[in-house]
Length: 342
Image (cartoon, rainbow, N blue to C red; front, side, top):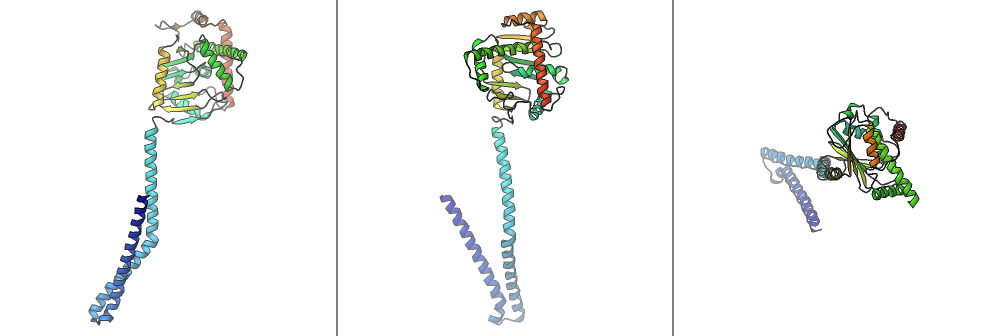
C-alpha cells in the first residue's frame, strides 16, 4: 500500500513540475515578445528578443501538442510492446519450468478411435526403435500389431515388449474385474465379478495367441505382472501415452508426455520393475537363443496350459480374429483405414 502511495505522489510531483516548467517557459516567451515595447529597446535588439520569445512560445506549443496527441499513443504502443514481451517471457518461463511435469498434449475419452490421437501415435511409432506397453489384456494393442504386422514401421522396430496381467493372479484379476464393472456401472456382485474375471482371463489368452501368430513378422517379448488396475502406458523413444482406468469409455482419456518429462522417467522405472519382477517371460519368435522362446504350437500350448488355459489354440485363434475384425470395424466407423498406421 505504501509503495502505491509513493508512486502516486511521485507521479503527481512530476505533473506539477511539468506544468511549472511549461508556465515558466511560456512566461519567458511572452515576456520576450513584449520586452522591446516595455524597455524601448533598439530595433535590432527588439528583433532578437522577439525572436527568442516567439521561439519559446512555438516550442511550448509544439511540446503541448506532442504531449496531448503523440505521447499518449506512443506510450500506448510502448506499453503494448512491453506487455507482449512480458507475456511471451512469462510463457517461456512457465513452459520451461513446467515442461518436466505437465503433459504436452491430452486426448479426450471416446467410444471410437480419435484422429488426433492416431496422428500423435503414428508420429511416435514411426520414429521409435521400441514399443513398450503395460496394461491388463492388451486388447487394442494386439489387434493393432496384427493389422500392422507387415508395415515396415512396425517390422523394423527393434524391441516390442508388452506387460500383461498374469491370468493366474487371482486377487489382481478380481480387482481388475471389479473395477471394470464399476466403470461400466454394473453392480459388482459375486457372480458378475466371477464372470468378468473369466472374461478378462480369456482376453489375455486371446492376446497371447494373436501375438504368437505374428511371431514370424513381428517378434514380441511378453512379461506378465500382478499389479492392480491403475493405468495403461505405451512407450516410445521420444515420449509416452498414459491412460488412467477411469470413466466408462472404451478408449479412456490419454495424456502425452515428452521423454524429457519427469512422468516419463517415473513410469519408465515402474515399467522396468514390472519386467524385472515379471511372474513369467515369453519371447514369441520363430527362433532364437532365449530360454523363454515360444516358437511353435507345441510350446505355445504348453505355455497356455501353464497359465491355466483349458481352451484350444483353434478356438483362441478364432476369438483373436474376431477381435481384429471388431477393431477394423471401429477404425472404419471413425473414418480410418485399417491398412494405415493407427
